[in-house]
Figure 1 (tube, rainbow, N blue to C red):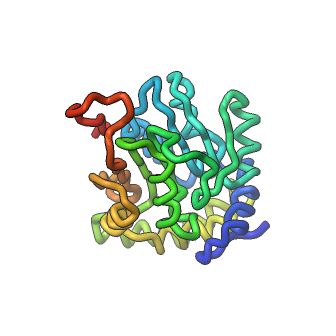
Figure 2: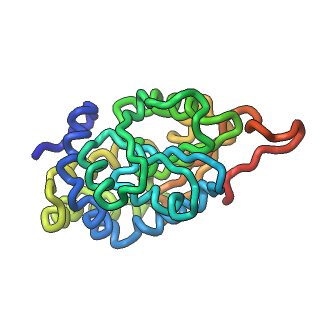
Length: 247
């Protein structure tokens, strides 16, 4: 099995995720020491979706991030460009509408969703700016974006310990749990090379998103970025402020 490089050729990245799909959720649990579950719950709360809204969960993988919405009766479209991930997800949750989709060329009409969310996927996209503009295109006026992604710990001493864990311990642990441990070398490299919280916020704003804000999770190992699309949601009376994601 192969691993992707920081060139992030889409076919290479998709193939890499195909190779880890079978044990992906288990490996993430082990490597994060269970923190990934807390991060995903925080993302779900930040999205604050309600019945009647439509959510696009891009880079949904096996669908674990989409399940809370479906279980609450909210329409959600879990999408990913790894067919291996989608196949594993469909076996787990055949009731979910898994869709093959490239973040840089989404197969959806303009203004199709009230919320677009992406957890731990943006740094794997070859051109994040193109993806962020695509997210804006398929979001309704007044709609929301929530991105959960690895970031930079704010404490300098802790940052050193964390980076050492990434580059040394993470690949070693992955050899015991993953079907393609070499892919986790790429994971560590991609996290280390990813911009910090402020820089990612600037990328969102440059792509046309408004009201960009972020919140650190686990000391900044992960950050939740939120933003809105300009305009008023359909059906909202003039002068009524659009609802934003809960803090």
